[in-house]
Image (cartoon, rainbow, N blue to C red; front, side, top):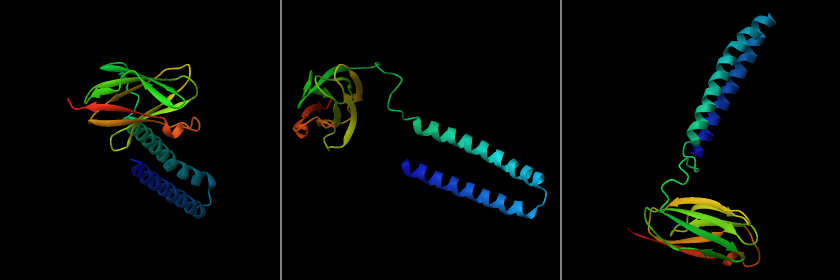
Length: 172
């Protein structure tokens, strides 16, 4: 998606540059400034409307897979409380099944921590902040079985690297 946005932006920038060059060259040909301005602004207003419409469409299309679903709280199969403290995680449960929608209630007892859930291939699946005095809610549906790792993404002191936990997801 990022490369598509890059190429689209590049094409629009080149198109806009070509239009500016065209208008600049046309303005040299005519001596009547008012007529030149009228002819120059007609395509510009159409181009502005086109660019505005394209911007709205691109914004809507790229935000459709918005990670914060409107159905928050709907269809939760299990709630897992995840509490961070230097330098460990405490989970109320550490097992789930494929297809279950889990809501992690993430908090911290001391400093800020980053709750990061990695799949069995050590690819980051999802993450959220763990903050003292506040509960952040993170919903995730596990799609494949295996041993998931929970790591801290926020540097929290000397033993930050050892702050791990595991979460086992079994097949149905």
